[in-house]
Amino acid sequence: MGYRDTYDRWKADPEAYWLEQAEAIDWDIAPTRALFDRGDHIYEWFADASVNTCYNAVDRHVEQGNGSRVAIIYDSPITGNKSTLTYSELQAHVASLAGALVAQGVEKGDRVVIYMPMVPEAVEAMLACARIGAIHSVVFGGFASSELAVRIDDCKPKAIIAASCGVEPSRVVDYKPLLDGAIEQATHKPDTCIILQRGQKPCELNPERDIDWYAAQDGVRPAPCVPVEGNHPAYILYTSGTTGAPKGVVRPTAGHLVALNWTMKNIYNVEPGEVFWAASDVGWVVGHSYICYAPLIAGNTTVVFEGKPVGTPDAGTFWRVIEEHGVASFFTAPTAIRAVKREDPDGEEIKKYDLSSLRALYLAGERADPDTVEWAQEKLGKPVYDHWWQTETGYTIVGNPAGLEALPVKVGSPTVPMPGYDVQILDERGDPLPAGELGAIAIKLPLPPGTLPGLWNAEDRFRKSYLTTFPGYYETGDAGRIDEDGYVWIMARTDDVINVAGHRLSTGAMEEVLAGHPDVAECAVVGVSDELKGQMPVGFLCLTKGVDRPHEEIVAECVTRMREQIGPVAAFKKAVVVDRLPKTRSGKILRATMVKIADGEDFKTPATIDDPAILDEIRTTLRGIGYPQG
Ligand code: COA
Ligand code: AMP
Image 1 (cartoon, helix red, strand yellow):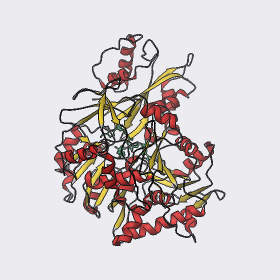
Image 2 (cartoon, helix red, strand yellow; image 1 turned 90 degrees about the vertical axis):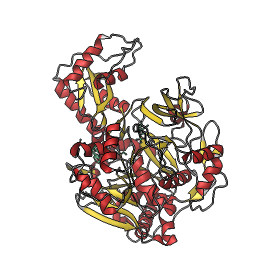
Image 3 (cartoon, helix red, strand yellow; image 1 turned 30 degrees about the vertical axis):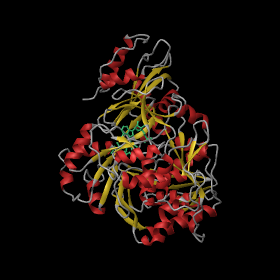
Image 4 (tube, rainbow, N blue to C red; image 1 turned 120 degrees about the horizontal axis):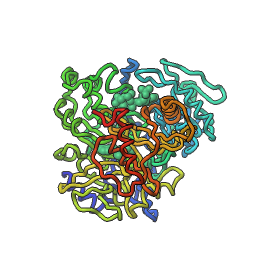
C-alpha cells in the first residue's frame, strides 16, 4: 500500500488505523480503545492500556533473542573514545541505574532532571527513568544555570542526574558548577544528584546531596520495569515559546511508543537490526525521539555521536561515521550540512568514504534551504528528505514516507502530511484557504498518538498557545502553503520564536535578559538570516536617559549577560544601540520590518508606523554591523 492509500485509510478510520499500529507494541494490558475524548478539545490515546517504555525499547529485544545485537554505538571524535553496548548490556546498565534511583527514593511519577552531554549514560539515564515510571526532563548542556533553574522550579525533580563535564571543541564545559548554581538559584531543591565523573574533568561532590554514578549503583537491586497507564507522562521537554518562561511539553507514554515505532520503517526506511543515526543532542526533541527512543523501540542500533560536523577533526567526520558503522539512515539539521559544505564545497571528504550502506539523508529542525539540499543530493548521490516537525509533536508532521513510498522530492518542501495529521492552511479568521495561498498552518484536532496532550502544570497556557486562535485546530506557529499536489511549504514562524543552528530559541526570553541591564530602557531582539546558522539573534538597545558610557561596553555586557543567563547556545553576539525602535502608532514594535531591513528584502512601510524616518536609521545602523550579509 502506498502513501495515498495509507493516508486515506487512516483518515477513514483513525482509531482502527492506530489500534492496528499498536499491535507492534508489547503491552502489559493492551488498549481496548484508541482515542479518549476528554472534552473541550483535549484528547488522549490508549489511556486504558498499561505498558512500559523501557521494556519495549530494551528488554523485549533481549527476550526475543536479540540480546547480543548492538543497541548503542558511542563515537566521540572530540574525546577519542568509541564503544558499543549490546541490548543485553544496555538492559543490565539500565536496570542497575534504575535500581539506584529507587534506592534514592525515586518512584513512579517523580520527576528526574537529566543534564548530560552526548554520552551513552545519558540514554541510560532516560531509559532508567522510563523503567520505573519516573518522568525525566532532559536539559540541553548549552543552557546556563538560570535556564536550568527555571526548569527545576517548574518540574520539581526529586533527583538530578548529571555529568561532571561536557566537551566542546574550544573547551571543557564544567557542568557541575552550572548545576550547583542552578540548584542554588532554584526554590525547589532535589534530594539527590547522581553524578557521572568523566575522565576529562571530574568534579567535587557535595556529600550532603551528591552521589557518584557507580557508588549509587553499588549493592542495589536491579529494578524491574514498572507498567504505567497509557497516558502517564513519559517525559517533559522544555521548549521555547513567546515569553521567557519555557513550555514544558508533556509526552504521553503509549502514543509515544506506537507512533515512534511506526516512523522507523515508514519514514526512515530501516529494518530492525540496521544502524540509524541522528546527529543531534539528547537535549533536543530529535535526540529524545531519534537518538534514544524510536531506534531502540524498533530494535535498531543507534549512534551516540559526541562531536561536531566540522572541526572534530574535519568535515569528513559524518562520512567516516557512516562508513565505519554502516549507517543506513542518517538524520541531521541543515545547519550541520551547511557547515560541512562551507568547509568542503567540492565534497572531497565525501569521496574518501564508502557510503554504500546509506539509503538517505533526512533533514529537520529548521528550513532546509534549496542550495543545501541540492548540494547534498549531488555530492552524496542519495535522496535528501526534508521533514517538518516540532517538539510538541515529537515526530514528523510533514515528510516523505520513504519506507512506505518514496515520493518525488520538491526541493524546498518537506513533502506531504503523514497519516494522523490533517494539515490545513487557515486565514486570520480560521477559514481554510485554497491551494497555493499562504496562511497559518494548523492541524485539525485531534492530533495523533504521541503528540502533546498538554503542558506540564500549565493547562491555560496550553490552551492559549495552541487551541484558542483556531477553535478545533492545533496552531503550529508556522506559516506556509499547500500546493495543488498536496505538498506543504513551510515559510516562517508566526510568533517570536527563532531558529539558530537548528536550535529553537525565544526572542522574548532574550529581550527579558537585555531589559534587565540597568542601562537599557527598551529593547528588541530579532532573528536575522544567517548563511551558516539559518538565523542569528540581533539585539536593538535604547538606553536609559542620561546614560553616557561607550556603547561598545554596554553591548559587550549584554552579550555576556545573555551567555550567563540563557547560555552559549543562544549565539547572541551582536547588538546595536539605537535612539528609538520602529513602532506602530499603538506602540507595537515592528520586528518583522526590522528583519526585512536586516535581510535586505523589499518591504512595504507599514501604514500604521509612527515615524517612517526611523527605518532609515535602523538600516544605517545594521549596515554598520554587516547586515544585510554578502
Ligand atoms: N554544552 C555546552 N555548550 C554547548 C553545547 C553543549 N552541549 N552545545 C553547544 N554549546 C556551545 C558551543 O560551544 C558554542 O559556544 P561558543 O559561543 O563559546 O563557541 C555555542 O554553544 C554555540 O554552539 P553551536 O550551536 O554548536 O555553534 P558552533 O558555532 O559551535 O557550531 C555548527 C556551528 C553548525 C557546527 C553547530 O551549530 C551544529 O553542529 N549544528 C547542528 C545543530 C543540530 O544538530 N541541531 C539539533 C537539532 S536537530
Ligand atoms: P523544535 O520544536 O525545536 O523542533 O522546532 C520546531 C520549529 O522548527 C518548527 O515549528 C519550525 O518553525 C522549525 N522547523 C522544524 N523543521 C523544519 C523544516 N523541516 N522546515 C522548516 N522549518 C522547520
